[in-house]
Length: 350
Image 1 (cartoon, rainbow, N blue to C red):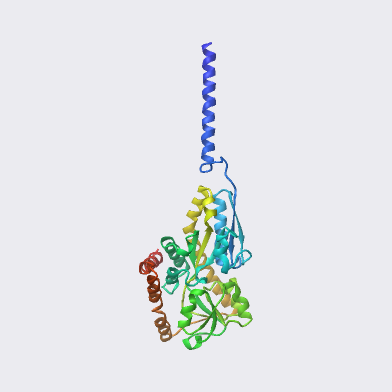
Image 2 (cartoon, rainbow, N blue to C red):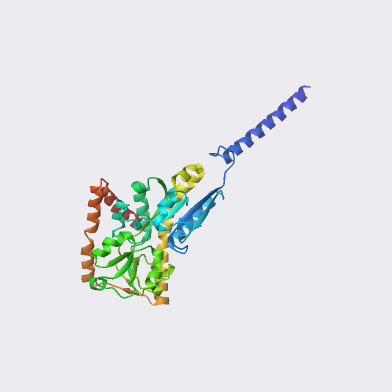
């Protein structure tokens, strides 16, 4: 009798132990999900330019990493080339839920990002990798007021922009009155140099060049191949100008509704994507320049030392003026500028 009771006790003990282990495993599997099972999430991601451009490559890499690191729990639907939202309505479209996430260039909205206008100006960035990480860190430390209603997913930047023109430009005289496509932040820079800047989004440039609306484009040089601009422009002036900053933002309500583990993955991808995008673009620019020179006969135009000095002197005061304007609005512009140069030195020396 005692033997039977002992067997029953052992069986009960084993049963209880198994139930405890199963419960513990289930709890671990569904941690952070009160429903007890992970819910699949689909995110829509919009961008205004074609899917072969470098910001779109970033989107695809981000989506791939997010889907992989969440074991397929999250799926990302991407809308390129303005099929869902254009540059002009990107922020409004994300705010009202047309897209969950939107990627755009802050320089397309002049005066909306006064601190970023400081770091977009010529500042001695050696390449996109450094510029991207600097911009990412600046946005993280000094979140733009215009983005307070969004969740910032990541940020990055182009290499410095260069004049890409139909006719060779090697002097201020050559540049005078030239109608060149620019993004918003370049307007005062090119006016200072005597050009006639034409504001339009990058994806409008190919047709505008072909129809003669513009005589050249000013941007980072990967578009020579990505958008086939080298078919129309045959010269690049070797003088680095401004960078273009990009930011990806998510609808705040959508962000807050995401499971905690998904939020953690998105957070860890933020700086990773900034570094990835900069490295990718620098390599891609080299490939684009080689292709343009070999396939389309592109030439690189250098300035004489005397001419370069003239350009440098004209642009030297612009960042100082931008800092003063931002300070007058009550923004920590001087502190921001100091941090800018600290970060450029830090990432350049890495």
